[in-house]
Amino acid sequence: MERTQYKILRHAYGFDEIALVPGDITINPDQTDISFVIDRLVFGIPILASAMDGVVDARFAAALGKLGGLAVLNLEGLQTRYADPEGVLDEIANAAPDRVTQILQRVYSEPIKENLIGDRIRAIKDGGVVCAASLTPANTKRISPLAAEAGMDILVVQSTVTTARHMSKSYRGLIFSELVKQLPVPVVVGNCVTYSSCRKLMETGIHGVLVGVGPGAACTTREVLGVGVPQATATMDCAAARDDYFRASGRYVPIISDGGIRNGGDLCKAFACGADAVMLGSIFAQSKEAPGRGNHWGMATPHEALPRGTRIRVNINGSLEQTLFGPTSVTNGTQNLVGALRTSMGVCGARNIKEMHQTEIVIAPSIKTEGKYFQLSQGLAGH
Image 1: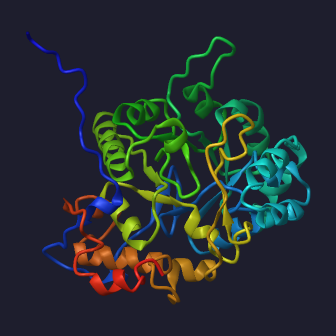
Image 2: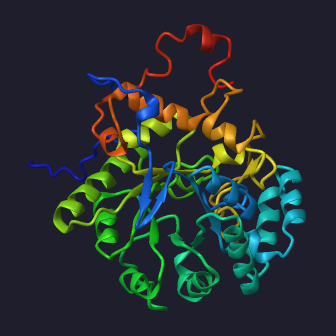
């Protein structure tokens, strides 16, 4: 009897399973160009901070902006629900593990205050940096005009999974092609993990795409919903969509690999997989400038019915400047990220990020363990 194959599965790869191949030429790290462009805005380093309350507030956004990066403020988070969120942040940081989800659900039930939206955006702008702010699709039409009027420079529309077409019986969904025409600022949209969804999002006229579903350190979407694509494969698939869209339209829409990056090695691999920039959460949550007091939690954690995240203690291991530029005080690769990227580019012979996209990648599940007997046996690999 002839048998039909029900589904054909392909292998998908995370950063742990791949390695970069050195180039045939090498370049001085200080001669590499790592700038990043969104629309007409240029940033010195291709690194964004996640729109999470344990990572970004106005003070952190100003600090990262002055160092060349871009922080994204969550306009639906604690900063816009409480005039003085410090006490709430203390409560979250000090909560017992078995109580933290309940506390998060309670504190996030406080309504968003429209006056605080303008206050937070102006505080970032007063720091002399570009202001990027994040909204979920459900609140974008209502809040984004207020944020743009207050001086927001970039809007990030973000949810666990975002598509160009959303079906609902109850309301007319957010239409990105209309949004980009209505707002005077660039629009970045996420998150997605497939070629087709990324390509369709770009065709709406948006200015950037966030790539990644579930790889974040504080996210449990993969465990709760079973949804996600390992981040190396997701980044490569969306990079293919970007390049094909550019060839067809002449418009280059950058992709930002969001989640799953734990150290400098992962960051370098993300660029080789095709990312134009990366978005970091847990690494930045470890800096003394982050508002989370050494804690990190995901944007879906306080969901009243189906929390898909957890508060994790990441501890504080240094300053934001150390995280980006060193000097390194830890051996786990979470500091001097810019130095790691420039050095990796030099070793791979890439003068800029687009040349880094051409770096050869091999499947190498033993890349972190091969020859590391003493590191592993003495428990030094993660410390």
